[in-house]
Length: 387
Image 1 (cartoon, rainbow, N blue to C red):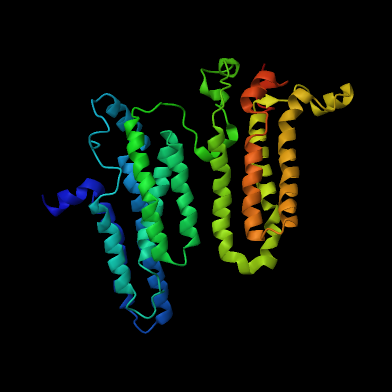
Image 2 (image 1 turned 45 degrees about the horizontal axis):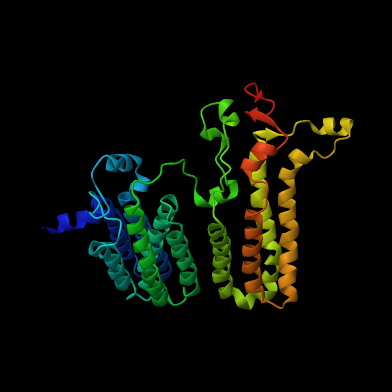
């Protein structure tokens, strides 16, 4: 087996990865044009670093996106028609890391060490190159885990990013952590492949589906029958998933703020940021519902009929403001308990987010019990339809 065949196991085609290498050496050649300009040389060195890190990030995502059936519906469909099982290797490319994956990051690290010999090059540890590759690779895997119902593997891998951020000032330790968290990711790969074929459904990114918590009315048939179709009232997310989804953003916030502990006077203003942020997210969610589910009467109709509040409809707007009230109360309670601000903010975010995820009404319940008018299109347009 020649080198090209050996590399094509993970890097087919090979020629795109030669492009950043050519750009790198073109900039290296440009250095020699004016060796007495240290400022220009430093700027060129920064461009070279950007090329190296961008290549590592793209390659990490490329490894998963190119090999995982989740990202290729035609590959997924074809694989279902074959006698393939998880006991065999995937027929095209492996999802898990192999020895060939060391070639491109290793080449980048060798080029970085070559650059560090120059005094004008910024001091960057080669560990950051490998870490960039691992972060990109694990991010792409996390998305596939949520689609293939490997929720625990997805969250466990995602929590690893927080530890990497905490030890970002010690890149070799952060790299070791990324390798350790590759273990649950590796197990998640094999568990997801063992459950193949996966259930096909309309995919919504995890970050958005936590806000919608139900299928869109556009999932079924066509207007108006899609809006009048039966509604699935089964909870889409378990209590465990909601707890993990609430803890994850708080953990990320903590891993960032722990590096800014000396900026207490400046960043204490962010104390009420979690409540405002979650309020805006869920308010946008409710506004997206209102494009289909509109008030049964206009603003002036409420005034003239003295029905200022319509409980069956206005309950949809009550939840976000309750979230805002809780968002201001929770940080103040933690403040009274003398919890440091860099713990208070992430903890408040997790508590408020968990409260919001469990606060009704869900879209399914509102579809079944709400008092509303169904609309197709935007108000005032000729294509508007109403039921």
